[in-house]
Image (tube, rainbow, N blue to C red; front, side, top):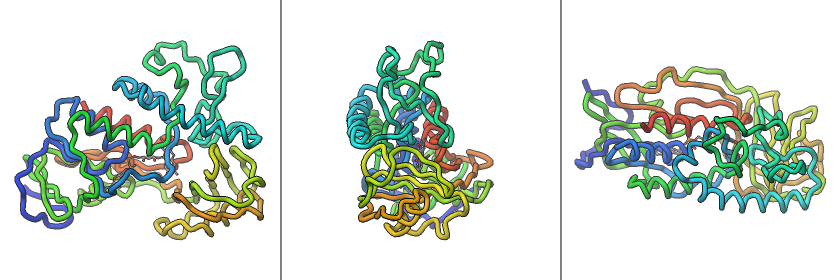
Length: 357
Ligand SMILES: Cc1cc2nc3c(=O)[nH]c(=O)nc-3n(C[C@H](O)[C@H](O)[C@H](O)COP(=O)(O)OP(=O)(O)OC[C@H]3O[C@@H](n4cnc5c(N)ncnc54)[C@H](O)[C@@H]3O)c2cc1C
């Protein structure tokens, strides 16, 4: 039986891949590299964006992800990035009198002053409730594979991780094509004909790592039940006027939660009373400014420029199955939830490591 999903495929070019991965986010790239290590000969990753997305998303890699990256020898390369990030964070801390933790999913760091080795002060958080780094004990065997300098996790912007994973995947022989969109596919008992813009390639398997609004998930007919959004959050890198009036770090007010820092211009707000009117509309400076003023209670703060911005919710959904025939899902394509707990990317890297072998 042959089933067709999405646009009707055009002329097949006879190109054969073991696996086509849709999406060069962190999960797609890590999965593609794992597939090569697992013995897949020809792996193609297609990504509709021409360049790595610089929008601030995840900023902190948790311990299981650190272990996974360490097993692949990727930590030394990422450590250099981490050092540069730590310098930026330190510059902001020196500038601002930071209240409490600046751990924001982007972390903060200095020694504990207890005579123990220097380690990031940020030990992770659960939905904004900070974990106490003084209670962190890395003497157990479960920490043996970790990078001692990373402590309980690694401060690392998602875009930097994606760049590193892109280099790693290509080094292992993965073909990564940017500026190419998956628009449809046809599957039969032996494989999948994948339509990429105007051309079609043939693969043994197709994996949708194409994010929370996954085309692969929709076209393959995976059920994606869950709960509707109830909150509105923003994370952005902006130019601010009146920034000195905003306190740095995490702050909860009567209206919501806001975070300023851990580097200049990074702001995050969460308001708990309603979902956004339009989740997919571009985020404007006016919208960010209004939210920041409401939550912080600082009417003088102005957003004068937006470098990157994203709107998020607590929409929580999970596919009821991760495989339909020769089509699979991983990462946000398979499960989405509030980013407030800082877990999504980490879960996806786990999916990739498990699926790879
Ligand atoms: C504000 C915010 C903060 C976050 N903070 C954290 C955090 O602190 N910790 C954490 O672990 N996670 C965090 N997350 C979640 C994390 O960013 C996601 O879980 C992660 O990006 C998922 O990776 P992915 O590779 O599955 O999907 P994505 O990163 O969404 O990548 C999917 C890729 O597929 C491409 N694509 C889509 N459709 C197609 C198509 N048809 N053809 C070709 N390419 C396509 C997209 O362009 C994209 O590059 C946060 C998210 C947000 C929004």
